[in-house]
Image (cartoon, rainbow, N blue to C red; front, side, top):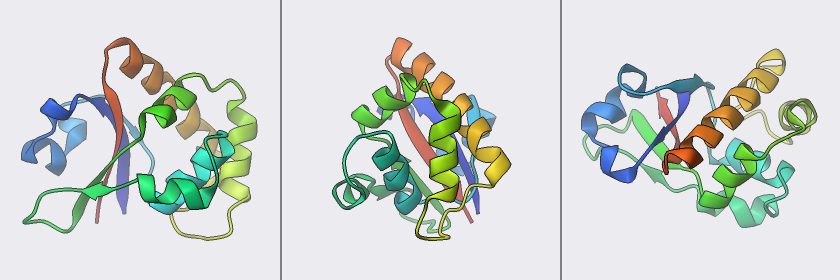
Length: 137
């Protein structure tokens, strides 16, 4: 499963963007994530418990294509990523301290993903955009 984080305003989300965000926006590649792995990351970032967070990631996407989806990251998630200081520690916990294999981030990729998403979150905050996670089968 392909996957990418990107920053956009809700008004910028359209069917063309949902097909290939990397063609229009700066993205951070992070394959295979889901609401499960995103909620686990939120827990690591201190945003609450997994059980409290998992339902905050509501899947959206085009009505006519169930092979593409989009998660809007909650605002507190954006803020936590923008302020992330201990990238290495958070990445190790995210990659290796999960009870499920779903949405597994490759061990050596976890730190890169969090470092790049943290930088993307800072730019998104400055530009008054939100973070999104796009996936495609």
